[in-house]
Structures are given as structure tokens and as C-alpha cells.
Image (cartoon, rainbow, N blue to C red; front, side, top):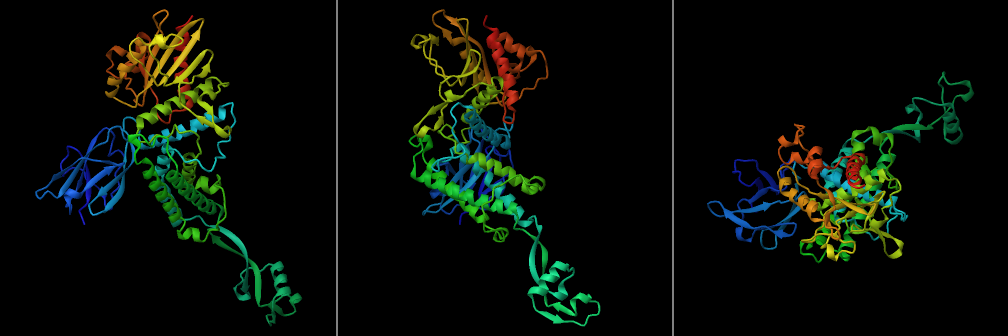
Length: 552
């Protein structure tokens, strides 16, 4: 058999930090593999070096050969903007294939791995909240029985499997036991406490014997039962919480098996795209693998003594107060998000495409924040009616009225102004900003453009050109006047506000100064996973104020 496969960052020598990724993979600490970096994978002592190939999510990596005898195979892997669980396939020739996974992290300055998962939670939660706010009342919780979770949801579930496995095994090793009373028949010499009611029942229904014990009550007339029927308390594990865990694992396993079948039989809307080749087959295999792991947990000794009764998970004292059981309750909430039958396909975004997920998250956060500003907001423009009267969220240029005279667009395309019916557009080339706030009052139009950039630090210096273009190139053709009152980047970057004077701040921190934004009409704002809807609403209020202030 070939030697191990080792991982190291490109540019480091063999004396640097090495991690075995195959076989018997070592745990790679969070933050070790960051996006936008390059890494090397080495297969040591390959038996057939020329036959060894490595695939990352179905794409073959370029290889090289090293070592005095050429038996060390090296692959260079440039992560790019890639974060999440990545599946690798190692081919060793003669039909021998090995599959293993590696978890890559977002840039630590952007979001941590947990923040990344939080972004998925909030994306799903915001979608459900907006559907519940819409005028079209569709019972999303009911589902259709044929809906497959979307790719972002499946990756979310996939990322939680290791923790779920660990939690259930911890519960197995130290389960909570509860004293339970049950009726049992004991020889009289083993009974330590005898109630009169138990004695009467035993005398009436069991064999009695003559006893010459002088301490017996006179009413017994010297007779005693051979067996005493009494209540016995034992520490049992067949409790509500364990029945709920068992029932939930079985349900999730069946759900993922069904999802694998549907993925195998159905067609994903993006399947013909070159980028998505092999996505369906990958997730069929992953869903079946997750189902297999869940069914394997049901074979633990703990669940052999627990009744197989459908029991919902609820916030019982054990789930709330026991740390291990609390972790399971938290994972249960995550899994409910992951299997929520969201209609539509706009969440068919793998976590590896972090930038696309970030753009989606920013928009949904802002629409939900707008619902706090305007309680009468109806996100129906984001929904369209399809067959059977169901609703499908669609993120298209349909405007969402968020305040008096203000509408929000998602990725609206602005063509040349002479092609637009309202005469608002560009005079050079077509543009598609991520989010656009439009206000038309007293016959005057004002726009505020928001461009979501999953970048931090000096990477923002390159992105600032886009807001300059949006600020200067959108005009109202009839008057030729510029209509953009502000153009802003939103980013996970948190500035270092060390100086109040923006003229002495370095880039890109200068962009976050309100004085700088008031002076030039461009800037940046921080939006990171975990920020409350109220915080996003506060930012949105500032932008709405800028729009209305620019109009009479």
C-alpha cells in the first residue's frame, strides 16, 4: 500500500506543520486551512506514482513528482474563495479509489467557521420569516414529501454530523437515569419495607405459609405470604428524552435516505452547468453516508433498552440543564433548519461559493430588517405563484416596497438609459448592483446602491472601484442628472477606528467614516453573521435618511 498523504501550506518545508489527511486522518485545527491560500498535498512512497490522481469536488488537480526515486506525488491546491467541507478522491490505479474530506475555513478576519455556519442559519431563518410575513399564507412546515433540501442546507447538515455523532456517543457513555417504580414479586425475606396494602394483596392472591414468628400482628393469625407483590424503584434509561433522541435519529435517517433517492431520480436546475457537474452524484453519496451514520447510532447499546415510540423533542429540564443534552437540543434546532422544506431553488448555493451565499444573506437580512421599520411590509414581490397554489421565493429584480415611496431591488440590471422605459440607466455599459434602494418623491428620483463584497483588508481597496462606477454612471436620461445619492460596500471587515479624522485613516478603514461618506457619497459598512436584525435595521435607517435628505 502507498504511504500516507500529508498536507502542508505551499512554501513551507517538510519541517513545517504537517497533517495526515489519508489514511487515519488527523484532526486539522480550525483556522489551519484558510481560503485564498495555496496548499500542497503529498502522497509519500506511492506504489504507482504515474497512476495516482487527486480530485477535489470532482476536479482533477495538477500533479508533480518529487523525491530521489520520484515516488512522492505532489498536488498544488489553490483554495480561492472556498470555505466549507470539501470532498477529495484519491485514485491509486487498478480501480482503487479512496474518498476523504477536508474542512477549509473562511479567512479568519472575515468570519470564523462558526460564524460561517451562522450565516446559513440566518439565511434559512430569514427566508422562513419573510414567507410568514407575506400576504400569501402557505404552510411551509407541512412540506410536500418530494422536496429535496437545497445545497446550502445539505452542506449545513453535513457540517453538523461529526458534532452530532460525538454528542450522541457522549450521551451513550453517561446517560441520564431516572428512578422508575414498577410492580414486582419478591420473596418475603427480601422485602425491606412492607406496606399494609401490599400485604393484603399478597395474602389474597398468593400462597401463604404458617409462621411461628412471635412478632407478627395478631390479625395475621400466624400466616404469611410466600411472595410479596410490591412497588420496586430502579434507575432506568427508558425515559422521554432518550425516546425522543431515538425517534429523531430514525426520522433524520429516513429523511436523508429519501433525499438521496430524490436527488438520484430528479434533476437539479443547474445540472447542465459545467461548474455543477457531479454535484448530484456527490450529494447522493453524502446523503446516504449521513443516513448510514444515523442508523449506526441507533445500534448503540443505549437505544436497545429504549422503547421505539415516536416522541418529539421538547425543552424538558434534562435537555435544558444537562450540558450534553443541551448540545443535542441545539443540534436539533440546526437540523430542523437544514431539513426545512424551503420552496424554490435560490439556496442551491454550495458553501464553497462563499461570496454568493454572502450576497444572498445580506439581501435577506436587509429585507427582514425593513420589516421592523415598516410593520406593514409585504415581501410578496419576492414570491411568485406556481402550480398547486404554492409559493416559490425568487430573488429577481422585482421591487419590494420597504418604506413610504422607497423600494428595494435585488440585482436589478440597469441598461443604457435610452433602452429603459423610465429613462434611468447608464450611458456606457450595463450594470447589476447587488441591492438598490430607490426613492421617487415629488417627481424626483434618488438611488442608493449597496454592493456586497465578501472581502476584507486590502482586498477592499480593489473592490471600491465598483461603488465609484455606480455613483457616477447611473443617470436619468431626460435630465442627464446623476441619480445615485450614495454607493456603499457591505463587508465582513471590521475597521480599526483608531482616529476620528478620516484624512489620517489608512485604506480601507477610511471608507467606514461617516464624515468621509457624507463628503464623497461612497463608503463601506460592516455586516457580519451574528449581527442582530435590529443592528441591520439601524444601518438601513441611515441609508433611508440619506435618500430622503437628498430629495425636497
